[in-house]
Length: 301
Image (cartoon, rainbow, N blue to C red; front, side, top):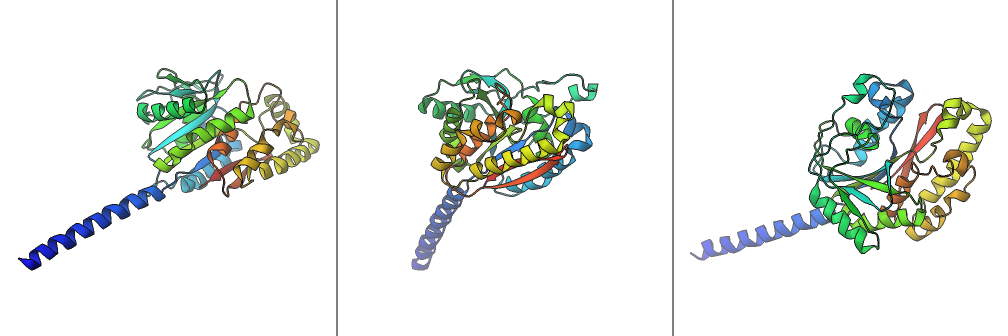
């Protein structure tokens, strides 16, 4: 009888200890923040050779940062897309979303692509509450499809469609402090193992220069290196307040208006949301060659 009672107590202590350890392990999980380049329309999926380095990094580096195929893989992804600009932060809130083929002039194959990951109305509500508390007037949208800033990279990164996705807009205002604040507002969801991805083209998004061949000139290559050096140093600043102090003046960085024309900062803004969500701490970056220049991606684990 005594041995049976002691065995029961030992078992209870073990179970409680195991439960505590499990809770501690869960609490230690912090999902990453990533700012990546999403490529030109559907071209990465269509096999365009100019995108081979981007695609390779999605399939290797980004998968590793997200810890895919491990117990620590994120339970969901919040993806901030450059291709959805709104007056207030807007959040996809459906349990399923169709794809929005927001590009023109491509082969028919590009308009029959599918990406059937689920959405998450519950996580959308959590984002809504946090943004509202931060002083925004967010909106939920259960109709708008996922644009190519969402489905093109995710189709290559998570082809099994196993992780729920919530899409989030950038702001028409292009205000860097507001975008940093948006990231800060949702940062604590990382503790629930929800990853945050900013999908844009932070290094360079000027189609006029790109398609005129201007991005291949020696002068442009010198300019983009100078711009990237200043930008990368600012983004990699470990203290969050100092990072914001630098990024809120990004328009004063050398050649900023060449890299992102006036009124055309939408492909830069997902990076600022990511930089806000990262909090204080050490990040990392890598460059992928695209049309002769390095496009940088940033991440915090």
